[in-house]
Image (cartoon, rainbow over all chains, first blue to last red; front, side, top):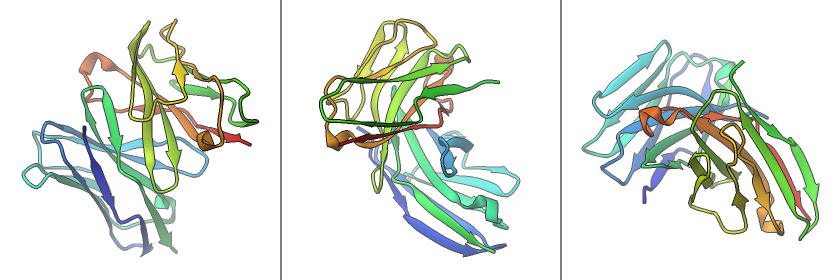
Length: 110
Length: 115
């Protein structure tokens, strides 16, 4: 089955700085890579995703990059704001199963 | 509003007392699934369902049952809960017409404590 590793587990940045979270996966058949944001007391929500036919996707301050050769994908948040503070999960669905990373708690310090 | 609704949000029970956590979605999604979230372990898939009367095990199915009698509902059943099932549970759904390359929609979670 798929194995997903996510780093770092916690990340503190000053407001306005950038944050980068990285995930690696094991199964080269995976071809869809979503990122979810979980705010306190809520379920995870999709913030951005990427399919294997592209190497980068951007949505305002959020971007995801994918390196299929190295089997890793990363979330980039620029100009961080306090409302970006949350837990972020990467995932690598394969067939009907979904394997998540262990999560990154991001704290943006005002 | 498109949503996944779980009930209850909080549940405290004792070992061995059967319980059911309900999940309902109003998006006409075919695929539904259950996850548990534990510190340091992320989200782990318990069971999933591709459609009515079609269910299959995820990575951590032991001690859980599910049923899918209607498209919108996917209850999680703990026949004899044990303390190691104390966790935060999430139900999710997605449109399976585009295979598994579509995002999951999550409920707001059920925090279960088994004493």
